[in-house]
Structure formats: C-alpha cells, structure tokens
Image (cartoon, rainbow, N blue to C red; front, side, top):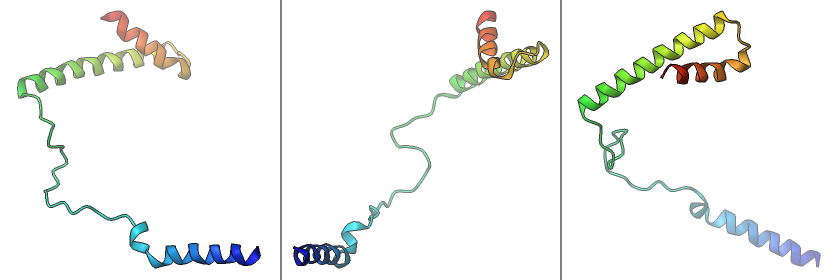
Length: 92
C-alpha cells in the first residue's frame, strides 16, 4: 500500500515537472494598439457631454452645500450621508 501511494505521488510530481508550459499562463498574441478604449464604445457628442458636465457641476455644488449645512448643524458623522441624500432630494 505504501509503495502504491509513493508511486502515485512520484507520477503526479513528474507530470507537473514534465510539462510546465501547460500550467503557465500564456499571453494571446495581440497586434492591435492599446488605446485604453474598447472598440465597441463610442463617446457622446460634445453638446451632450457638456450638458452632462453642467448637470454634474450643479449636483456637486448642491452636495457641497448640504455637507456644509450638515456640518454646521453638527449632524453625527455616520448620519451625514443620509442627511445629505435627503437634503439633495428635498430641493429638487
């Protein structure tokens, strides 16, 4: 019994040592240039991006005002996110 287990262990070790290429990760050869953007994505038109940026700026300003208001009212730190969320939804 001990010999059989020893033989199985030797065979398993030899199979790993014998074929390291099958275990290693191989990189797929890719000749395309890396642009950082997926090819199926397109950017929004300039007018749409500018509109989104303006809306985000308004939201950022309102959140900053609500955070300052929460700090002035000394709302506990762990309750501030809920307070800010409520504050921003009330004014809309």
